[in-house]
Image (cartoon, rainbow, N blue to C red):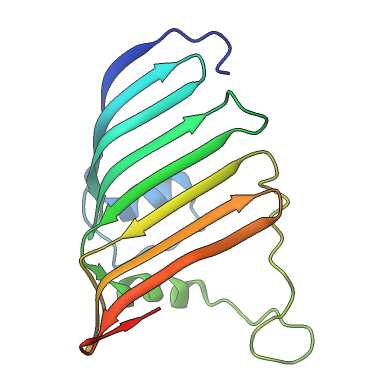
Length: 174
């Protein structure tokens, strides 16, 4: 549990005038040019000895909107995070622009463009998670996806992509 924490209910709010400046202050090596805009996050924090819940999450990070609920439970054999988050319209070129700024080089040892090595999640051995993300739409230049949705789980056996769907060109991607 949370060490005998008392049950309670609190309104929480976080705000900063600029996402890029906040990110640079927290991690100076992180370049987030192009993601200017305010950071705001509010919700209702419910605490109990077995964990906490953040309900009614509402806010945004630069150009990205966020709403939903999350729960952190510690009364089982492994702590568990569950979250259902709804994002606003997702301009993917903005996110991909961040990756381009990082100038990541291929890490494959065999000369291929992408590595086939499994991703090491050993830094996350102590908890399980199930996170579902959805949005009304996503775009990359002229390419549009409607109602994208992804669900991932993290557990003792690793990370699993449980669901990845979106509408595109009068059809459905699954």
